[in-house]
Amino acid sequence: MTEVIEAVTVVDGTGAPAFIGDVAIDEERIVEVVPREGAGSGLVLAPGFIDSHTHDDLAVLVHPQMEFKVLGGVTTCVVGNCGMGAAPFPAAAAMGAVLHPGHDLDPWDGYRGYLRRVDDTAPSVNVAALIGHGTVRSSVMGLDDGPPDDDQIAAMSRLIDEGMAAGCVGMSTGLTYEPGIWARTEELTALAAVVAAAGGIYTSHIRDEGSHLIEAVDEAIGIGRDAGLPVVVSHLKAMGEPNWGTVAAALERIDDAGPAVAADQYPYTASSTMLAAVAASGRIGTLVTPDAVVIASTTDHPEWHGRSLAELADRLGVPGDRVATAVLDAEPVATVIVHSMSEDDVRTVLGHPGIMVGSDGIPSLEGHPHPRLYGTFARVLGRYVRDLGVLGLEEAVHRMTGRPAEVFGLVDRGVIRPGAVADLVLFDPATVVDRGTFDDPRQSPDGIVGVWVNGARVVTDGVHLGTRSGRALRRRGERVSRTGSASA
Ligand SMILES: [Zn+2]
Figure 1 (tube, rainbow, N blue to C red):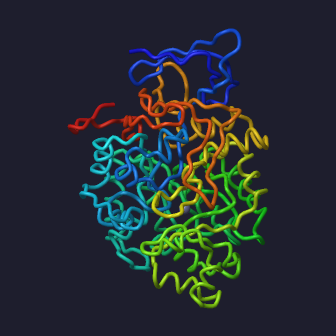
Figure 2: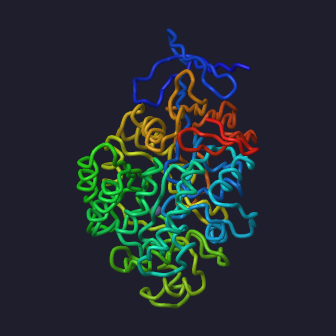
Figure 3: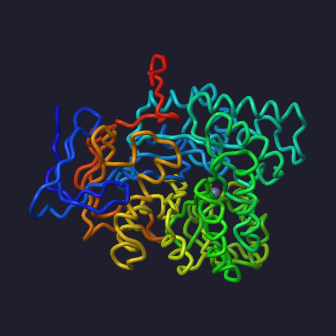
């Protein structure tokens, strides 16, 4: 059955100028794109947003409607970032216990099993998966902080090979977290070479996003060069006031490295991560003050959510330099929001050609998550395109659609043209905006009028229709049917 979306402003995801036209979809594909004369409805039709940086590996299974993403126009989530992946299962389940307490998952076998589970679950968004280096490493080496021996490298390589053969798009690292923090450049280069041989990419939460930002960017670029594969520097930023402005030099390094090196960013001046990682970095009290660190989620202390470490120091009666330890004693897996970046830097990075957009949202829905989980893409369009003019509409859409499709190898996605898959978002450029705030984060954006995933309508006028038409996207567009036979 053909559906025609009429008289819309088509922003096709390639960066080409917008035009008024009609777009016809049949089954899951776009079949016709026809320009038309005269005024349009004013609504923009764009390819569905590809969230190039998520931690939704398990969220797509336990919250398959994915309201926090699809109501914001996202049609594909790249999961497995920052070294944290979905296989092997036992290590992935440990992440699930932190992010999704109370949701038990039946085990799966490797990435092949995970991607098949995604297909069987049919979430409301598509999923492209990165192999998590940290998950692989801890599965082979436990919490061994030394370098791997030859047998351990071979064992990790086998797990990575399995993931690539299953259709993963590459490997991610998280070099400020255990166990990634223990991995030396040689280890990462050796494992990245396995990914390179299978045609994947290397994405990295780099070793330092503060005073050693440039060295850390250089390490990522060097791994890509030596292993022979494309690189994505994840959530590019400079943390801590003394380091503000250094993003410009980081962007220069990335540009100088050529087209095989890319970066993504979330459009906010606060980060969000594990409190344990922030405390271990020694930054609290040096680069960030206790009032800039706010509890996002805990296991047993909901009354702490939304409170800063400074407030908790008062409440718990402990000195400011010991409050992080006190909180971690009670809540070892607490996550926090850290207000540590500059708005100028956010604009510098977002204004730079080629930078992709990734929410980096932590899908701990019971807590007090960073509002980026819901609002990232609408915020780019509302605040940074319309209100501040940091970048143009066509360019912004390209960086949220066609560009990540290219970087992650998502065939026939991220563009509006006949033959492409109908992952689409219809929005009102005059009203689109994020609504979540740090005090009240769990708000879906305004102005998202319609969302289609694989040709099926999922959202109408900001309302989720219950449609679950997403699936696992495998590298080179390969798709394994639910009975297990491969089709190109
Ligand atoms: Zn990260």
